[in-house]
Structures are given as C-alpha cells and as structure tokens.
Length: 303
Ligand SMILES: CC(C)(COP(=O)([O-])OP(=O)([O-])OC[C@H]1O[C@@H](n2cnc3c(N)ncnc32)[C@H](O)[C@@H]1OP(=O)([O-])[O-])[C@@H](O)C(=O)NCCC(=O)NCCSC(=O)C[C@@](C)(O)CC(=O)[O-]
Image 1 (cartoon, rainbow, N blue to C red):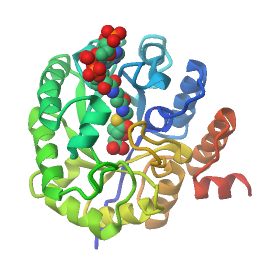
Image 2: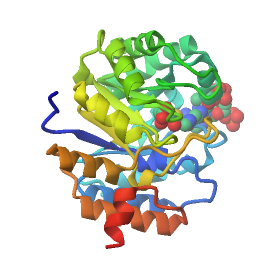
Image 3: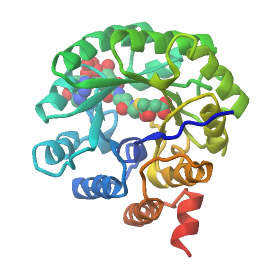
C-alpha cells in the first residue's frame, strides 16, 4: 500500500454544496464563502454553475459571482476558480466573465443524463465536444464529470464498463481530468476500487478524481480505498453541504474538513489549514441555517 504524498483538493462547496438550497443565498455570502475557503488554503474552488436558472435557481447569479472574482479583483493569485458549463451558451457566458477553468458534466446512467441535462449520454457527448474545443481554443482548461459511477437513483447498479466508456470519451475530447461522481453515495470501498480499476485501464490514475457523496456514510471509507489505488485528487464540500437537485435524497459531498483530517492522519499534505476550514464550515452553516455535517468540523469548533 502506498499513498500519495500530496492530494489536490477541489472544493465544490460554493457550487455543489449550495446548488440544492431552496432559500435564496446572497451573492455576497457566496463570495465570502469562496474567499474564506481560499484563505483556508484551498487552491481549486468550484465557484458557480452556468446552467439554466429555471433548472437550478440557486445558481442564477453565476455571472455576478464569477465577474466579482475574475473582473472585480476578488480572486486570489494562485487559486483556480472554475464553473460548470453544460453547453455553448453557458460557456460563452462564463468566458465573458473571465472564467479560468470550466467543467462539463455527463453521466454513466441514461436516465440520470435525461433528468439532469435533458439529453441522452450520446447527445451529451456531442454537445460537450464544441464546448471543450471552444474552451481550449480560449486557453481555458476543462474538467469532465461522470455522475452515477457507483449507482443511479433511477437505474440502480451501474456497470463499471459504462463508467469507463463515458470517462474515456471525456478524456479523449480534451478534458484534462475526469472526476468520478458517486452522486447518491451508495458506493462501498470494494465497489469503488473495482470501478476505479476498470476506468484506470484506459485513463492514467493521476488524471482521475474522486467525487464522493456521503448519503450512506461510506464516503471516507471509499476515499481511503481509492487513495490506496493511487487517486490523488479529491472533490469535497465544506461542512458536507450539498445534494443534487436530480437525485432525490442524496446527501452532500464528503465534508472537506473530514477529508483534511483523514489526510493529515495519513501524513498526506493538502495545503489546507484544518482550523480555518472548520471555522468556515461553522460560519456558512450558521449563515444559511443548515446543520454542519462535518464530524471533524463540529468536533473542532466545539472544543
Ligand atoms: C443543460 C440544460 C441547460 C439543458 O436544458 P434544455 O431545456 O434542454 O435546454 P435548451 O437549450 O432547450 O434551453 C431551454 C432554456 O434554458 C436556457 N438555457 C440553456 N442553457 C443555458 C445555460 N447554460 N445558462 C442559462 N440558460 C440556459 C435557454 O436559453 C432556454 O431558455 P428559455 O428560452 O426557455 O427562456 C439544463 O438541463 C440545465 O441547466 N441543467 C442543469 C443541471 C444541473 O445543473 N445539475 C446539477 C449539476 S450536476 C451535479 O451536481 C453532479 C456533479 C457534477 O456534482 C457530479 C456528481 O455528484 O455526480
């Protein structure tokens, strides 16, 4: 067993963490969250989502958020701020706001693809191709997501071969990294390992990321399992905020504080200050009136 020395964390709290909140959250609160996360040491922050406001109302202020960061002087040097762009319309808007990095998001499940982005897997890949081409032509890097890699809310079990096939397509298209999403958190460590082994036959392991939700309390165990396999990029959300609007009952992402606590214990550097991160989790959950789902965060802030 050998773990990586360093893990790159992708903080998805401002996007995945907040997208499902039904109460309006002000742009100022979102920007303060992003700044606090950067101050805690996060170097990759998913800040917004250029999707239809009819589909995901909470992300309707994507322009204001990204403009404030990239054109309003609120971005920190050395931090990459990214946004989801499901189509050319979203990409064009994100480029106008000066975005540094974007992500396209597909699924390994046909039903989830239809519910989430209103098209089949094949249609989504066709739609992403010009998005990736245009972004790369503008010097903007593109990340790819695959949802439902360990289970689908509509179809149940998903064949790892299907995960590998969609991941391959995104990687071949020009995505520099493919993030593997256990959207509904049904995965368990052996399942996660097997899925990863299948995908890593075609894509170098250092081009893959783990994006695990914690619905069944398995996310940290799953992360430990894929760290053993060589994963060195982990997506997480401060205070375990989040859920997917198109996966009813799905809990938030694994909490960033819990991941940093795990990594610290394994002697793996993430560059993130756990106390500052825990204070950020405490602040955002109090601000938006949500329970803090990070066990490490709650333990640290109640000392
Ligand atoms: C993809 C679409 C837009 C297709 O939606 P559609 O209805 O098929 O698109 P359309 O092209 O027919 O357009 C319909 C309307 O949407 C507008 N529109 C069209 N595109 C945009 C855009 N980019 N930005 C703003 N507006 C847009 C467009 O202008 C039009 O407006 P209208 O004429 O009706 O007023 C829609 O299905 C959508 O927005 N879906 C959002 C899904 C989403 O955000 N899901 C959550 C994120 S994914 C996730 O959480 C999983 C992940 C990544 O975290 C990994 C994991 O955990 O699994």
